[in-house]
Image (cartoon, rainbow, N blue to C red; front, top):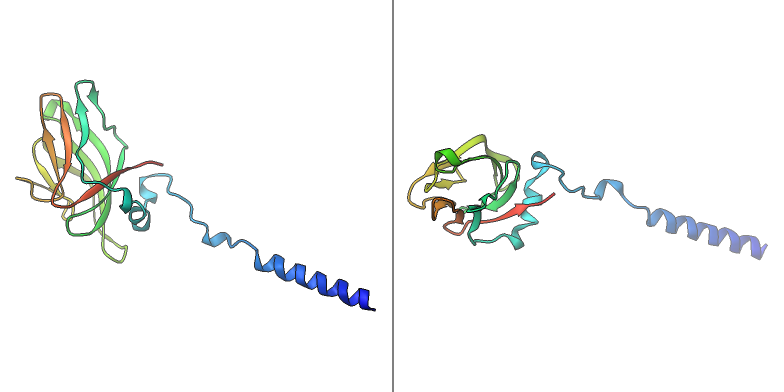
Length: 164
C-alpha cells in the first residue's frame, strides 16, 4: 500500500510540474517581418541603439538607401515612429520620398502618410509629417556635394535602421 501511495504521489508531482512548466504560446513575441508589422513597442525596444549621428544616403558610388529600407525613430517631441524609403530621385536634387507613421504615447497611430517628400537641403518635422526649412524639425536632408547626400538628425531626434 505504501508503494502504491508513493507512486501516486510521484505521479501527481510529475503532472503538476508538467502543467506548471507548460509554455504559454500567446506570450511569445513574434518579431515583425515587414514595415506594416512594426509596432510602437518594437520601436521602443530599439531606443537604446538609436543615434543622432549623420547617416550617408548617397555618395560617389551611388544611392546607398534603397526603396524599402526602414528606419525607426524618436522625434524631438518624444514621439516614436517609423519610415520606409519610397524613393530618392537623383534627377530632382535627390528628393527623398518616405512612407511614415508616428504614434501617440498610448501606441495608437497619430499620423500616417504614404508619400512625404523632402527636397534636397530641406528638413522634415516627423511629428507633423511635413517638409520644413532651416533645420526645423527632426532631420535635415543635406547635400554636401553633387554626389553626397546625408541624413542629419536634428533637435534631439534619434534614428536607427530597422533590420528584419
